[in-house]
Amino acid sequence: MKLREWQAEFQNLVLGPAVSQDQPPEDIPNHLDFIQQDAIRSQRLEIYQNAYQQRLSEALRSNFTCVHELLGDEEFYQAAKKLILYFPPQTASIRWYGAHFPDYLKNHEPYKSCPAIAELAQFEWAMRHAIDAKDAERITVEQLEKVLPEQWANLCFKLHPSVTILSLKWNAVQVWQALDSGLPPPQPMEAPAAWLIYRKQNLMNAWQSAEPLEIQALEFITTGNSFGDLCAYLLDQYKDSQQAITQAAVWLKTWTEQGLLLKSDSLQEGG
Amino acid sequence: MKTKALSGFGLGLRPEHYLDFLREPQRVDWLEILTDNYLVPGGKPIYYLDRIREQYPMVMHGVAMNIGSSDPLDLEYIHEVKALADRVQPLLVSDHLCWTGVKGARMHDLLPLPYTEEAIIHVADRIQNIQDILQRRLVIENVSTYLQAATPMQEWEFVTAIVEQADCELLLDVNNIYVSARNSNFDPRTYIDTIPMHRVRQIHLAGHSDYMDHCIDTHDQPVCDDVWELYRYTIERAGDIPTMIERDDNIPPLNELISELDIARNISSQALLLHSNNLGDRCYEAS
Ligand SMILES: [Fe+2]
Image (cartoon, rainbow over all chains, first blue to last red; front, side, top):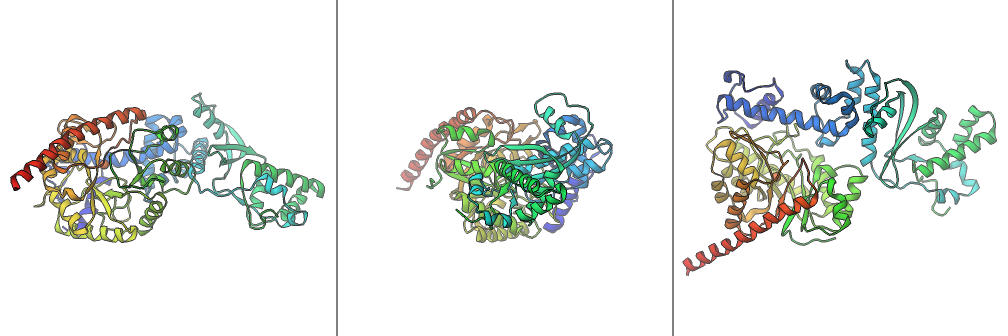
């Protein structure tokens, strides 16, 4: 048998129906000609089958500790098993395994009927992302203070790569906070809010809720629109130009202090 | 940044011990990083990696090159490893003599190869391609196996043929030899006696789980007596080889691992006396 064919068959056995040592040995075909006979052969195949399931479940468990905590061992491993079947790993590094877990929980029963679970998973994946997202130089309040009046209108910004903006309908973050501190979680309930999850300058993760308009403004100014554009955008909301400019300036300072914004090309050094 | 030849006794770097290594100097000569844990864009892992690298020589150890697969080489992955190696400047770069998936699947497990001529040619050729990209010799590690295809070849003959043909180097995992020997019924000493020791750059020691009629390579407990004895046997025959302990699960405080490393230091220095005697005998016989 050619190597390619042998490997494909071996992989099929590992991904195929679970074997057990109680199974009649003739049920485990030996077309791959293993030296291990009968019951030993199924015992060994079971080791590879378990290793595959366990390594992936373990990766999920470490990325979604609070979902695991909420569902409990048994239910979590059932969910993991199904995810592995629906979304087998596709990346060389196991670090990224779990990207589909929030979606899976959102769309499949029994998790679907409690949407807070999928939202909790979404939050944990955003936290996981914040830990090792790309580093990038953030803009500082000192740099903003040096901006000349005529430069302000054209200032542009980008979001720090660690930032995730989540719009959640449920109290998933409160559930997460309780579980993360070892407390019993609150009952799932509707509590619509927008959340910012990001890595601070000191490498610690941060999360906070924000008003919908603030989130809209943040998304607006970090997608190619200038500070001047933002003021015009807010004018539509406030109908008062001074109030719009003041609000834009306050938010810009807050976002800068939080480390959400990157230095833009339009902001010249010492300008 | 320290860069000298690899020597002495090392440990696998684990996030649980980051702060121990930064707080004060530890009795560890070098550290092995898990390549795949640092193929991330940035943040905490990279920050600690850079800081600890300033203090310790490092080697890189990966799990996902899929060296033995009949799928095309994942060139993007190998270039990522190269980029990390450019950053870390490791004393060596290793991965496993196995395959981790075929037809695009990523099994995230170290799967066994059939010991055939076809596999030798295929794998040796891929190792050469990888070495061309990395611009350095690749170090390949023997894996623990649970199933073995019946072929006229033994694992040690297969390993020897590949490293000779690919002109690469070896990371000898003494625990994996022991586990495979138990699972496939061979004498692990024959393995040690046969492989080309001059190509061995590094030794791994680890714990496994013993189920009497088979063993599983779990890396979650201390090295067992049988593996220590096999390590002694290896050093008596091969001489001084940089050695480390791998612990991937159930990770104890750093000082416990350093104490376990002291056992390796002791066994190695005792075995080296015998090794020099062996050499002496041979010189005497030759004269
Ligand atoms: Fe190893």
